[in-house]
Length: 352
Ligand SMILES: [Zn+2]
Image (tube, rainbow, N blue to C red):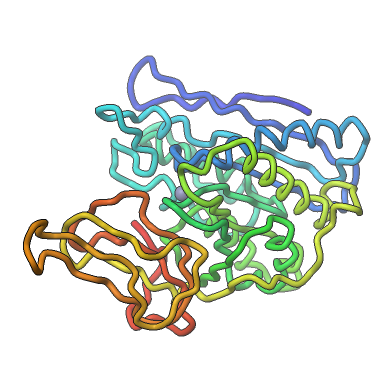
């Protein structure tokens, strides 16, 4: 294994961010290569601790000569966001300097090669330069895993529709419960930046069956513990074994995924009709009927008609819910995977 440290100058004098990168060299030129990063949204740490639990398994595989494909690991991809504490709270999703989501506006290359990158410019703000760097580190890998988490949720994948159902084995390997398929644009999220160059190639060159590209949502922000870290590390290891990056036939996952799979147009973003306190009636992982009570919003405490019940607009599956127990009018508080297309499908990414 080789460790290097990428240095990213900040936007002001005297500030430099450091991003450790770990590389394992594969022994087989034919084996797929893999890139794994965590905490692009800097407050989402389940993936970081999963990588920490994964590294000893990779080192052991290396010592035993079982690493077939090149593996690049970036355990903490966003030191810029990680440093953004504001009055005691971490803001790891949006860059404070530009108000831009750290997982949007990545450069979309016209071929999966470093030479297709836009020129590096010191005049760009640090979030722009970070995105260029992460694409530079990841471009060309056959397998790209971007480890995130939701507010509160089941483990699930976002997957480009072009890679499904070929990626079923990966969903089984990682033990996710649901897969949301998207197509077209996602606001140039990292995942879109990973798939876009391959989609510009003729199908025989793109060889999409070989590609694994997913945003992995490892449950919720507070689901950072030793047991999940270990089981998630095993899931990533199993995926690498299943796809032949690591030689370990016993760890390979079966092909058929029997969890929830739905296009992103089926996701109902349930929002607050009024500001107030949230009393949830459902939990992630629950299946619910059309019209089922999802939450009660207490908007005028003490009044006889001071609360509103939100009901399910269609039957489906509760994917996530807000980690907060209060909200503003219009805030999204539940993602419900409907059995049918939503009457208000989101264009592109589900969230800002
Ligand atoms: Zn995220």
